[in-house]
Amino acid sequence: MCPEECLPRAGSSKLLILIIERLIHRGLGLARVSGKAVFVPAVIPGETVECELVEDRPTYARARLVKLAQASPRRIQPQCPCFPDCGGCQLAHIDYPHQLELKKEILRETLRRIGKFDPAEKLESMIPSLLPFHYRSRLRFHARAGALGFKAFEGNQIINISDCLLARAELSAALPALKDLARELGGERELELDLDPETGKIHAILLGRGKKFYLHEGGKFHKVSPPKKEFLRLMSFAQSNPEQNQKMRALAAEMAEASGAAVGLELFAGAGNLSFELAAKLKKLTAVELNVRAVQLAELLKAGRHADNLQFIVSAAESYLQQAVKAGEKFDLVTLDPPRTGAKKEIELVVKLGPKTVIYISCEPSTLARDLKILLEAGYRLERMVPLDMFPQTYHLETVTLLEKS
Image 1 (cartoon, rainbow, N blue to C red):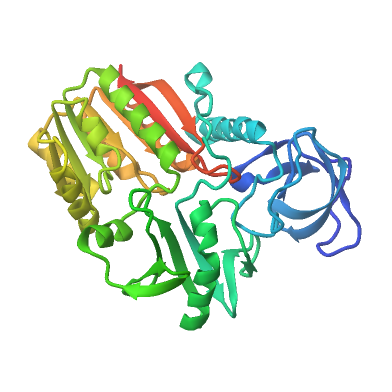
Image 2 (image 1 turned 60 degrees about the horizontal axis):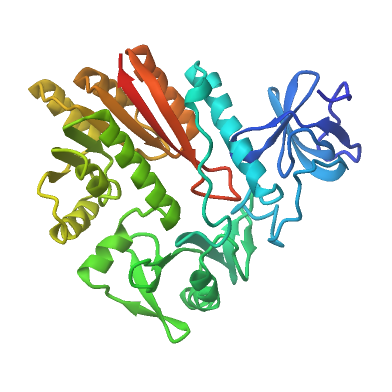
């Protein structure tokens, strides 16, 4: 609680003295003044801070850190000079082991608040990233009026950067050439920078209507028409922390094998990120994905592997499930890896399908909590919940959850 009894006006020179209770969504610190929640970036639970009020709404307020009255022993000097203004990182002021602990508690609190359940001992320790920095093989940048970087944490300003501690070293080295490309293109642009972990090639992707591709060679980006496999990979979603992604694949495959399932269904399969490892543990796997190009890439990858028991189908997950329920199809295992919006409608249909085992991979705790609540109320029990730190220095986390039908 805050010792102040009321909030000063936004923009007032009077500072708030706040005690940070915990971290919440977006890595914001939560404090309270007369019961009202006040959100503050770049703080740590237990700290006493002096803040300036920047917004006061009926149910909450936002404040900006001005001074640390009592700093946490887990606070470190951020390595990035753009922190905390840049929206790329939110936790760079916290030592890495404590980041893991705080993310786990954010997940637990979200499950309690939205899912109305406590995972207790089923929530395992966070799997740390091998690389706390320089782990991303794909990043999205904004360019405007000569600036290239990330959107600011607050507002629409672009924070101009010369380096990024989240990017692979090869991508950081290509940033000057990307800035040159952005200047040549002019206007306001969104550009993705991609490192192919297999070939080492670096591409810039100009986003918008009709993507355009540029290959990094000789210190410059040159417009290209990539060959088919390369084109399909650039057009498909890819996890941007390759080492951590491999841990996630292995974990999902381990859960599938331990379940004893023979026939599996995978939803939101993408280009087969999990499919091949899952198929190796099953007699048959049907992998469903809406993105045609992702499925085309998956088929190309399948051609080089022994995966005759794996079938890719182009379909929306909801549509496929509706047909499967109507046809009375049976699956021992359903695995799903939906986008941040979750899979509420799909989960309701999964319940009707009635698999013995569900593996749910999530990148957003709030929608995970909502969807797990449906499964638990339908008679599934939580067996394991394993959070992975796919994105160190940020509030984002991945969670792999195993449920069995009671």
